[in-house]
Image (cartoon, rainbow, N blue to C red; front, side):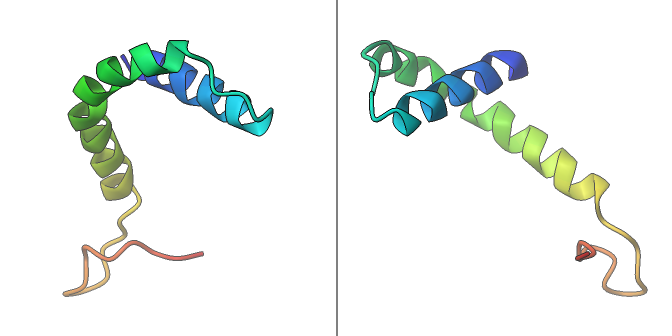
Amino acid sequence: MAERLVEFLSDRIECERRGVLARAHVADHHDIRQVIPQVAAIYRTIVRSRVVPVGRRSRVPQRF
C-alpha cells in the first residue's frame, strides 16, 4: 500500500515537473483518496518516533 502511494506521488511529481498531467492520474485519484487515512497513520507514526522526551513537554519534536 505504501509502495503504491510512493509510486503514485513520484509519478505525479515527475509529470508536473515536465508540465504534463497524465490522464491516468485522474483515474488514480479516486484510489488515492481511499489510502489517505493510512497515509495519515504512517505520518503520525513517523512524527511520534522523532519525539524526544523533555520533561513535561515530551510531545514536542526536537528541531535540528
